[in-house]
Image (cartoon, rainbow, N blue to C red; front, side, top):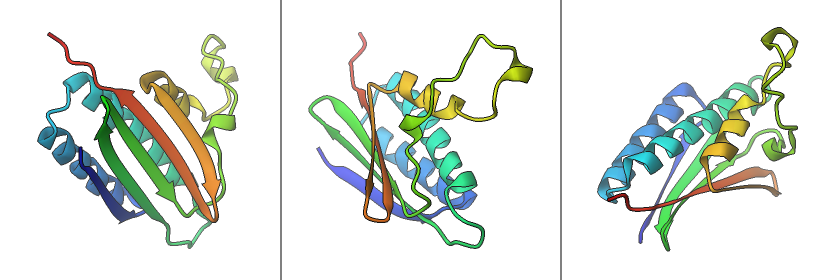
Length: 140
Protein backbone atom coordinates (compact mmCIF):
# COMPACT_ATOMS: atom_id res chain seq x y z
CA UNK A 1 0.00 0.00 0.00
CA UNK A 2 0.96 3.61 0.03
CA UNK A 3 2.85 5.57 2.61
CA UNK A 4 2.12 9.13 3.68
CA UNK A 5 4.52 11.41 5.42
CA UNK A 6 4.66 14.96 6.66
CA UNK A 7 7.06 17.31 8.39
CA UNK A 8 5.75 19.72 11.02
CA UNK A 9 7.02 22.15 13.62
CA UNK A 10 7.53 20.63 17.07
CA UNK A 11 4.56 22.51 18.50
CA UNK A 12 0.94 21.96 19.52
CA UNK A 13 -0.09 23.11 16.02
CA UNK A 14 2.26 20.53 14.50
CA UNK A 15 0.66 17.86 16.68
CA UNK A 16 -2.78 18.86 15.37
CA UNK A 17 -1.49 18.63 11.79
CA UNK A 18 -0.18 15.10 12.40
CA UNK A 19 -3.46 14.06 14.04
CA UNK A 20 -5.42 15.38 11.06
CA UNK A 21 -3.11 13.66 8.59
CA UNK A 22 -3.46 10.36 10.45
CA UNK A 23 -7.25 10.67 10.56
CA UNK A 24 -7.30 11.24 6.78
CA UNK A 25 -4.87 8.37 6.17
CA UNK A 26 -6.82 5.93 8.35
CA UNK A 27 -10.11 6.88 6.66
CA UNK A 28 -8.61 6.53 3.18
CA UNK A 29 -7.31 3.06 4.06
CA UNK A 30 -10.46 2.05 6.00
CA UNK A 31 -8.45 1.00 9.03
CA UNK A 32 -10.39 -0.74 11.83
CA UNK A 33 -11.44 1.58 14.66
CA UNK A 34 -9.49 -0.36 17.31
CA UNK A 35 -6.26 0.16 15.34
CA UNK A 36 -7.02 3.84 14.71
CA UNK A 37 -7.80 4.53 18.37
CA UNK A 38 -4.66 2.77 19.62
CA UNK A 39 -2.43 4.63 17.17
CA UNK A 40 -4.10 7.96 17.98
CA UNK A 41 -3.25 7.48 21.67
CA UNK A 42 0.31 6.40 20.87
CA UNK A 43 0.86 9.34 18.49
CA UNK A 44 -0.47 11.80 21.04
CA UNK A 45 1.80 10.44 23.78
CA UNK A 46 4.91 10.38 21.59
CA UNK A 47 4.36 13.79 20.00
CA UNK A 48 3.46 15.53 23.26
CA UNK A 49 6.65 14.17 24.88
CA UNK A 50 8.74 15.45 21.97
CA UNK A 51 7.09 18.88 21.96
CA UNK A 52 7.26 19.25 25.76
CA UNK A 53 10.73 17.83 26.46
CA UNK A 54 12.60 17.09 23.25
CA UNK A 55 14.36 20.38 22.61
CA UNK A 56 16.56 22.87 24.41
CA UNK A 57 14.92 26.23 25.16
CA UNK A 58 14.80 28.35 22.01
CA UNK A 59 15.56 25.44 19.66
CA UNK A 60 13.16 25.24 16.71
CA UNK A 61 12.38 21.59 16.38
CA UNK A 62 10.95 19.60 13.50
CA UNK A 63 9.05 16.34 13.61
CA UNK A 64 8.61 14.05 10.63
CA UNK A 65 5.95 11.36 10.71
CA UNK A 66 5.30 8.58 8.20
CA UNK A 67 2.36 6.17 8.11
CA UNK A 68 2.42 3.01 6.02
CA UNK A 69 0.21 -0.04 5.73
CA UNK A 70 1.93 -3.13 4.44
CA UNK A 71 1.46 -6.86 4.97
CA UNK A 72 -1.35 -6.43 7.48
CA UNK A 73 0.60 -3.97 9.61
CA UNK A 74 0.25 -0.24 10.20
CA UNK A 75 3.74 1.16 10.67
CA UNK A 76 4.37 4.63 12.11
CA UNK A 77 7.79 6.29 12.10
CA UNK A 78 8.35 9.45 14.14
CA UNK A 79 11.63 11.32 13.60
CA UNK A 80 12.73 14.43 15.48
CA UNK A 81 15.90 16.49 15.56
CA UNK A 82 15.80 17.03 19.29
CA UNK A 83 17.88 15.95 22.24
CA UNK A 84 19.02 12.32 22.07
CA UNK A 85 16.51 10.32 24.10
CA UNK A 86 15.67 6.62 24.00
CA UNK A 87 12.25 6.33 25.63
CA UNK A 88 12.51 2.54 25.61
CA UNK A 89 15.44 2.66 28.04
CA UNK A 90 13.18 3.94 30.83
CA UNK A 91 12.22 1.49 33.53
CA UNK A 92 8.65 0.21 33.54
CA UNK A 93 6.68 2.38 35.97
CA UNK A 94 5.51 0.87 39.23
CA UNK A 95 1.76 0.89 38.79
CA UNK A 96 0.96 -0.41 42.28
CA UNK A 97 2.91 2.17 44.29
CA UNK A 98 0.92 5.00 45.84
CA UNK A 99 0.59 7.96 43.48
CA UNK A 100 2.46 10.33 45.78
CA UNK A 101 5.53 8.06 45.80
CA UNK A 102 5.73 7.56 42.03
CA UNK A 103 8.17 9.64 39.98
CA UNK A 104 6.66 11.93 37.36
CA UNK A 105 6.84 10.59 33.81
CA UNK A 106 7.17 7.22 32.17
CA UNK A 107 3.51 6.33 31.76
CA UNK A 108 3.23 7.62 28.18
CA UNK A 109 5.79 5.24 26.69
CA UNK A 110 4.36 2.47 28.89
CA UNK A 111 0.97 3.02 27.20
CA UNK A 112 2.61 3.08 23.77
CA UNK A 113 4.35 -0.25 24.43
CA UNK A 114 1.09 -1.78 25.72
CA UNK A 115 -1.03 -0.53 22.81
CA UNK A 116 1.37 -1.34 19.96
CA UNK A 117 2.55 -4.74 18.75
CA UNK A 118 6.13 -3.54 18.24
CA UNK A 119 8.09 -0.44 19.30
CA UNK A 120 11.71 0.36 18.47
CA UNK A 121 14.08 3.30 18.83
CA UNK A 122 17.38 4.27 17.28
CA UNK A 123 19.48 7.41 17.08
CA UNK A 124 20.48 8.11 13.49
CA UNK A 125 22.94 10.98 13.17
CA UNK A 126 21.32 13.91 14.96
CA UNK A 127 17.82 12.43 14.91
CA UNK A 128 15.66 10.26 17.15
CA UNK A 129 13.77 7.56 15.22
CA UNK A 130 10.86 5.95 17.07
CA UNK A 131 8.92 3.32 15.15
CA UNK A 132 5.77 1.59 16.30
CA UNK A 133 3.39 -0.75 14.57
CA UNK A 134 -0.01 -2.30 15.04
CA UNK A 135 -1.38 -5.44 13.42
CA UNK A 136 -4.49 -4.85 11.35
CA UNK A 137 -6.98 -7.58 12.11
CA UNK A 138 -10.37 -7.56 10.51
CA UNK A 139 -13.20 -8.02 13.01
CA UNK A 140 -16.36 -9.77 11.89
